[in-house]
Image (cartoon, rainbow, N blue to C red; front, top):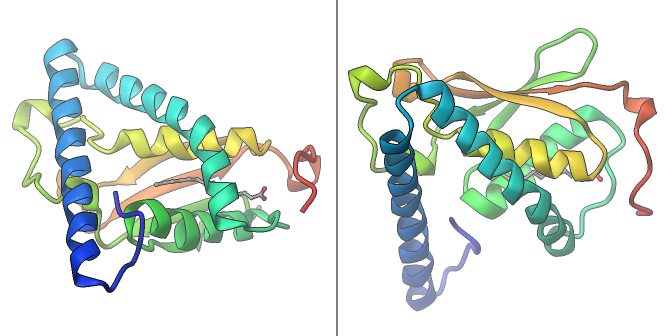
Length: 184
Ligand code: MYR
C-alpha cells in the first residue's frame, strides 16, 4: 500500500517496503482463505465482506486526508475513486469509462494492479477466484457510508487471461435520491 509519493530516497525505500509487505500479506490472506474454503465463490464472498468492513472505516480516513468536496454526479464519484482514492492507497490511477446510457455504470480499468505484483497466474483449480475481490468490498463499503449504494464486481481480470483488469461499479439509486451526509 503506497501512502505517499515521496522523492526523498531514504523514506522512499520505507514506502516501497511497506507496499511490498502489504502485497505479500494480502497474498498470504488469499492463500489462507483458499485453504479454508473449497469453493472459489466462498473465498470471493469472504474477501468482499472483509473489504466491506475495511471500506466502511477507510472512508473517514479518505475524506479527512483528501479533503475532497462532495461529488455532484456519479461520474465525479467514479473519477474521484480512480484519481484520488486509488492513487492514495494503491499508488495507481485506473482509467474510468461510463458504460451505460443511464450514467450509473462505470468501469475502472487498471493497467497495473499492485496487489498482484507477486502473482503469476491462478492455479487451474482456482479458475473462478477473484483474487482482488477485497477491493470490490472496500469500494462498496466506502460508498455506502456516503449514502451511495453500489454493486462492485470484477468484470475482467488479467490473472484470468483477460486483456485488462476491469472493476465495474453500478450505482443503484438515482443520483437525486442521495441523502445528504456531508456539508461540503
Ligand atoms: C462524496 O461525494 O461524498 C465523496 C465520495 C467519495 C467516495 C470515495 C470512495 C473511496 C473508495 C475507496 C477505494 C479505495 C480503493 C483502494
